[in-house]
Length: 493
Image (cartoon, rainbow, N blue to C red; front, side):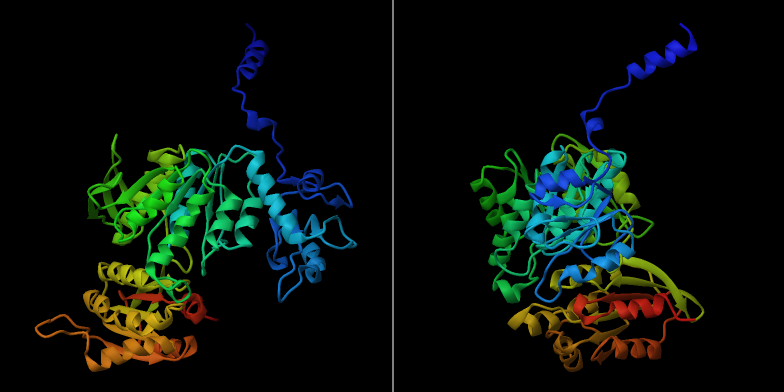
């Protein structure tokens, strides 16, 4: 056989994949018309979907959403100035567009067509703590094993707008899609899971985040369990085994007739921790029992909470049909996300210090976990900048004051407390109320209480950061501690 003939035979033998017949472009004008019932002014193709004109990239479809405060139609010209290919509008405009009756309904229609037109296995992630990090870890594992054919919601696009937007970006050729779902009030999870219709639904943990709005831990567990209502037939509910509400969540899942998989340290967990030892990189080496097999892998992220998170990741990857070896490699290589654990070297007196950026979110459980991880971090001194934890309602003084003990256990040298709610902790530290009779463990460091980020920046500069220090910055996003992180990681001049 000649060279030409052998090449021809090789090409004929190339494996066929039904996905090869799917379009390369994310959306065409005709597909958008079919999904929304709208009318296109021009023929076009779009490579992305965006709702914020500031984030538009060349080739994007700009959806002009109308909210209570802003009307996206006012920003159509700005979107096209940044390279938008077309827009979805409820009125004619002087740019390529698809005219629809309601742009929000059109976004939902795009999301549902994106969900249904391909064969991607969809994974939904919710929980009181760790949603974004776990979502990113599952994505990294599945993207590695599928060679770039996984998709996920970016940033924390996990609400009534972010979830359908993320779903509308799901390529037809994707093999996996990972979607984060969040809530502040009762009744918010069910509509999100109805959009995604996941094959796998994971709850990371239950903690008193948003307890001000939901009223009790039981109500939080019940609301999180609503993610199971959207599961596809034959789907899998993945539930943490180490909470007081595990059986409650299992009851919700079994009432829906879905498969249940538990994970954690509990001896009856389906994906069970056998051992975890510190790794030289600050993370952990984990050995887990998955029933039919045992795995040993590294987790780059520090802290016991990431040991538990990794078990949930493994459970989700297995349920989705992914590769567990790839999941282990992904966990070994993960770095912290901006505002959610990113570690950065900063200038310090005599050399460099480490700043841990946890400025995006905070609740009692994540505060304790992060302080514990800091206590396990080798450092010359350990410094914390702790912002108020929001949406705790009448529970706020108690939960803030209770941070005294984990601070003591982490051997914190200096604390800068930011926000009114942190006043309860400041009072606790002043009075020494953290110590019980005969209890030698109490916070022995120094502290300052500040009103806001600007004052905290001054306080940290006055205290001084020395070579080898570890500085943790953590608080609810509304406190604005991201400004402090930017100040110390991106100094002017």
